[in-house]
Length: 136
Image (cartoon, rainbow, N blue to C red):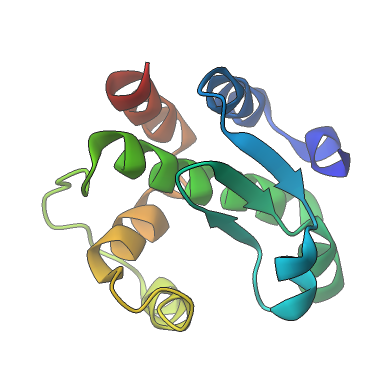
């Protein structure tokens, strides 16, 4: 899997944790071709990275691959908890508020889930701690 080459040490630890949960990790499955603006997607059994969409859309690739891993890992932790992580007053910069709205095109009911994921996607150590707390 190409995305593994881009991971930070914390990103690699997050992926290792997700693998322990028996969640299938997929890179560039058909959903990525269907939605060119999709960088990642998570459901109960799948962790999807659309590395080609990242490479074809935005740079630096390493930054956005890791950010996507962190973001989707938040959703894994939320799935393990069976709800939001109850982060108090997550403040998003304007760019991320727009990203939340764009993400809701794919997940209409997930506003609070997406706010948490965008809030935490640049805090990988915290994401890892939530994965360990709620999933292991």
